[in-house]
Image (cartoon, rainbow, N blue to C red; front, side, top):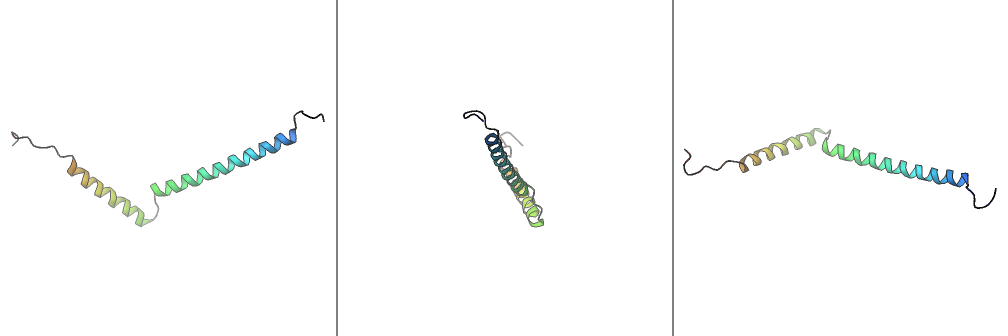
Length: 75
């Protein structure tokens, strides 16, 4: 084989290394999505109850903030 020409073995090894790197990135992203999904949609009863309680508290505090002020002429 002449020197300086294309080396199929070298190209295949480089491609294999890139594929392994992309697989590792894919696994990392899959793990990140799993963690975020567990945070947003917990499966433990305590976590679900805590999320519901927080939503109730937020809705109660939000109600008081958006009351329409009465003007002087309103009954």
